[in-house]
Each structure stands twice: as structure tokens, then as C-alpha cells.
Amino acid sequence: MEAKYDFEKKFREQVLQCSRCGFCQAVCPVYGATLRPAYNARGKMLLLKEVMDGKIELDDQLIETIFQCTTCASCAENCPSGVNVPEIIKLARKDMVRIGSCHPAFKGMREVLQNHTNIYAEDEPEDFGREKNRKASVVFFVGCVGLYREDESTEATLNLLDRLEVDYTLIDEVCCTGVLEDVGYQINEELARKNIDFIRATGAKTVITGCPYCSRTFNSKPQYAALKDTGIRVIHISQFLKDFDFAVKTLRKVTYHDPCDLGRHCGIYEEPRMTIRKFAPNFVELPHHHADALCCGAGGGVRGAYAKNSIAMARRRLQEVEEVGADVLLTECNSCVHNLANAKLRKQKFKVCTTTQFIIELLEEADSSG
Amino acid sequence: MELQGYNLPDHLYYEENHFWVKEEGDELVMGMDDFAQKMAGEIVYVQLPEEGKKLKVGKKFAKIESGKWLGKVFAPVNGELVGVNEELETNPALINEDCYGKGWMYKIKPEDKAEMNLLIHGVEAVEKWLLAEIEKYAKE
Image (cartoon, rainbow over all chains, first blue to last red; front, side, top):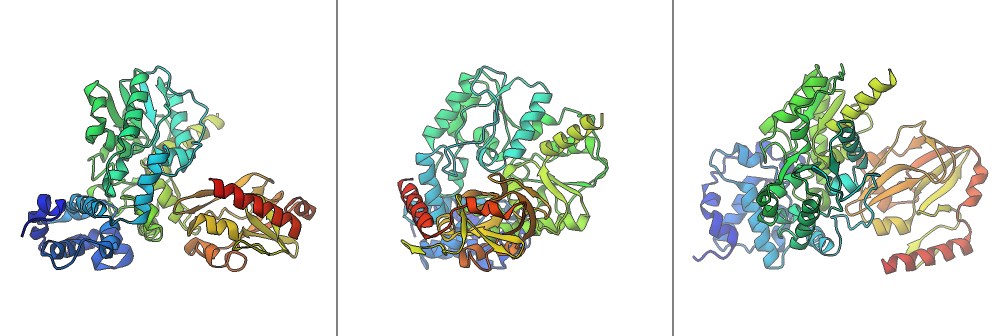
């Protein structure tokens, strides 16, 4: 039978390779929060095989299962059969969108980005009181979550860059739009061009991003190839900070949550830890860490479309923080901070913040104690 | 009153960002009004600060989110936060289900209860304000 959908043309063999072993179920954050087999990778592959065999249609009835995935890649990481479920899901989503079947939240997100500069359709980003668009060696690219949801985290990062006397500038950035590729659409080329033009106009040769998703997008999507082509390097803030010693210490028990977009997707595990270990001798790992880290539940558009389940996933991750008895949970992704902080219960007294926020707090404590 | 599908009880006092306030003994109870909860959609997160937090009238003291919107909660009067609705921690959608009852949000010990008189209150004032708000949001 002729392949009808792109996901089948590209990934038919992988879908058939799924041996139904269920290793993915053990690590899937959506399954962990919902206990629904259809939402986990094995369930998705079973359903897509039914689609390939012409037994069911790829239509609205599959929205819940195909669009409810954080694309955390825990399944792919643990699959003994080599099935790259997130990539299959992303392409299946594009197939669904093409035939007019899409979760309304993601359709709405695409429309928002056609008319606004950010995923929240807000017109006034936080004003951090720093100059924008000036000539500088470095552009600091904040990202939508940092601009519109986690301004305290961004302010802390900017304070740290100021203390380090980094020659940086902000720009009139717009959404990198990388998320659209994950939810059935494509990068918004007009917005991508704006970002590239703003970055190039500064003369900067380095872009530091506050968001690992933005740095992934800039480094891997062809719409942003112009950056690399003109010798502009894009790194995440955790990669930049690893070489600094801030000469502060805390005896509090600190732990670290590996963001999926930094860890499993980019292989950046040690740089954040190098920074943390310098100031936190009582650093402990969470039970699931590095490539086994549990997803916070925010990714793949899930926080926008399935907020309750997204927060439920975050609560499972926070239970691990309680298990290790940490006082502080650090992470390097504003989206993770946002979801984890929202999910944290009042009885959970540990702190959730980015590494830079915590470093600034320690520096300010040191300053005030003279 | 009920106006164009929005229910705003007459006996309540309203802060201009669509939070209602009522007296309960020496304290005030605060929540989100029907207009705001309908505009916001399903509430997914309500920030519940620690009791004892000092509140300054007109200043943001908490955040509230729906899937598509982040809202700020502004103090309607000067005072101190003395209670929060802990049910909202695991069931924030109570605000959508019953914004004037089970979905109450905060309890405040006011410095001066008379500050409530600066809020929007009374059928005429509420109607005028609500009509203007409906028109404002219809344009956006």
C-alpha cells in the first residue's frame, strides 16, 4: 500500500520496529502522570501502525495522543529497538496539520506568532532597563518565557553578566519560533529573519541564550543558518558560565534538574554541574539525572495545551527533590523553572530557581554581610 | 447584577483589575470576578504567597495564570495577607467553577477598612464600569 503520510514515508520501518516491550512506558512523563497507555510511545506507535495499515484515520480522534507529548525523548533514550518516537510524532503532527487536524492551542499559537512577536501575544515585554540593539561583542537572547513569564530569572542573569562586565546587548528580539516545528508547523521565517537581522546589526560574534530551546533552534534549524554562515556562535548561558568561579559558597543542599532541551537534546549535562559544584559542596543528584532525567512536563507545547497534566508531571519531578531532601532545586531553563515553580506545593519548602538566580542571591548575601 | 452574560453581585466591591472584595468580620475576602474568569479561560495556576505578606494598595502581590494568559493580582487595600485558599493549589479551576464561593482566593487584614470605599461598588458604578470593560476587551 502506498504511504499516505510523511511520517510513514520517512519512519515506516521504525514504527514497525517497535517491539511493544514497554521500556518507554517506564520513563514516559505523560504516562507517569496519566497512566494512559495511548499517551505513551508504545501506544502511539501501535496507533500509527493502525494508521499505516489503513485501519484508522489520522484525524481528530488522535489529537489527544499525538499532540500530548513533551518530546522529552526519554522513550528514544530507552528504546532497545532504536525507535525515535519524538521525531516520528513531530512528523505525524505535521501530517495532521496538513489535513486540518490539530490541537486548537497549537493552531492558536501559530496564529499568535503570525500577528505578534511572542507566543503569549503580549505587546510589552519586561523592561530590564538595559540598552538594546547597540554594538557589542555578545547578544543576550532572552527567549519568550524569560521575557514574559520569568522576568526575575532574566534580571538575575543580566545582573550576573553586568557583574562579569560582559560586553553584551539585548535586542528587540522576537520568538525564535522553534516550538512551531514541534507542534505541526514550521519556523516563522519572517520572525527568524528579524532575529537574524537584529543580531547581525550589533556586530556580535557570540549569542548567549537564556533558553536552551532557543539555542537549539538557532544551531539546528536551516532558517537560522545565516548565523553560523557569518561566523556567529550561539551558546546557552550554562556553557558560558562554566569557566567562571564566583567565589561564593553555600552549605545548603543543592540539586539540579536537567532540562530535556539542554540535556537529552543537546548533550549538555556537565557544564551546569561544573558551575554548581564550585559554589555548592553539598550538591546531590536527583534519583533520575543526566540522560535519565524526568521531564518537567512543559515541553512540546504541552504546558499550553494540557496544563493540568503538565503540572502533574512537574509534581512528579518535585517529589524527587523531596526524596533527596534538597533545599534548592536549580535548573537552566526558564520553561522548566516556570512549570516546576507553578507545581511546587506550599508544604514543599525548597527553592526552585535558575542557577544564575541563585548565584546572584549568594553574591548579594556576600555583599551585604560585607 | 447580570450584564451581557457576566454576573457581578451587587453587594461586592470591585478592584479595577476584576477582583471582588467583601467583608468577613474584621477581615476581607478577595477573589476574581466572573468577567475576568471568563476572559481568562481555565485557570491553571494561582500563586499563594505566605501569610504575613504585607500588601500595598495597587501593588501586585501574586500571579495567576490560565493556559493563554498571565494575570497580576493587585492589593485592593493596604494590609496584610492572612489567609489563602489552599484548595486552589491543586484545583485552581475552582475559580472558574465558583468564583464567588469555593473559588475565593485570599484573606486580608486591612489597615483601614474604609479604603474599601475607594473600590467600585453599587449598581450604577458597577454597570458603568463593566460596560466600559466589555467594550474595551471587545476591541482587543
